[in-house]
Amino acid sequence: MKAPALTVRATDLGKHYLRVHERPMLLREAAMLMAGRRRRVDDLWAVRHVSFDLHEGETLGVIGANGGGKSTLLQLVAGTSFPSEGTISTRGRISTLLALGAGFNFDMTGEENIVASAGLLGIPVAEARNRLTKIVEFAELEDVIDTPIRYYSSGMMARLGFSIAISVSPDILVVDEVLAVGDLKFQDKCIRAVKELQSRGITIVVASQAPLFIADFCTRALWIDGGQPRLFGGADEVATAYQIEMTGRGLLDPPPSAVSHQQ
Figure 1 (cartoon, rainbow, N blue to C red):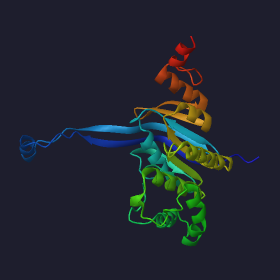
Figure 2 (figure 1 turned 180 degrees about the vertical axis):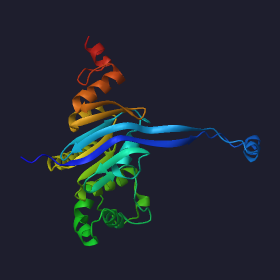
Figure 3 (figure 1 turned 90 degrees about the horizontal axis):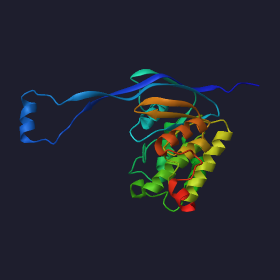
Figure 4 (figure 1 turned 180 degrees about the horizontal axis):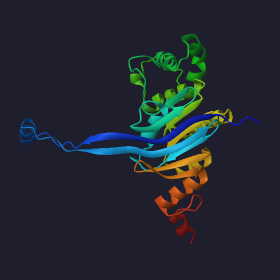
C-alpha cells in the first residue's frame, strides 16, 4: 500500500517582528523625536522553534491562548507570511480562510468575489462559474449574491469565504478559528463539509482554543505557548493537557458547578 505523501514540512520555523512602543504624541514627545531621541524598540518572536511534518489526510489542530502565535503560524503555512528563520515547505494547492473578509474586494458583488478568489488559486473563470451555484447554495446567500459585499454582515462574509475555501479542490486547507461562524445549524454544516474533505485525504491545519473540538476533529495537535511549541502529539493527548492546564480538569470531567449541583 502506498504511503501518504508528505504535504507540509516545517523545520525550526520562526517569525520575528520589531515591536515599537508607541505612546500618545504630546508636544513634549514630538520635540524629543525632532531632537533625535528614538522610541523604544524591542524584539518579538511571534513563532519560534516550530517543527512538524504533515501527510495527506492528516489534520493538525493548533491550540493555545490568544496572542500565543497560532495565527502567525497559520499564515506561515499558508504562505501569506514568510519565515524569519527555518523553512516551511508545502505540496499542492493551498486554500485558506484566515481572517474575515481577507482577499475580498468590498466594492465587488459576492459573485464577482467568488470568480476573483478562484482565479487567485489558479482556477479558470469558466470553471469558477461552473462552481458558482454550489458555492452560493452552501453559503446560503442566493438572495444577496449580486450585492456588493460591503453590505454583507460579518456572518455572511464568513459563510462566503468558507464556502469558497472548501470548493476549490484544495490539497491543503488552512483555517483560523472560523468553523464557529454563523448559527449552530451552519456550524454543523461546516464541520460536516470539512470532515468530507478529510475523508478525501485533504491535509488540514486549523487553529482553535476549544480542546474538545481539537480532540474530536484532529488527528494531531500542536500546543503553542508564547510562540513556542509546548506539546506536539496525538490530538487527544495535547487537547487533554491543554484543558487541564487551563481549567484543572480533563476533557470529560464535569465543570465544578455541575459537581456541586449534583451533591
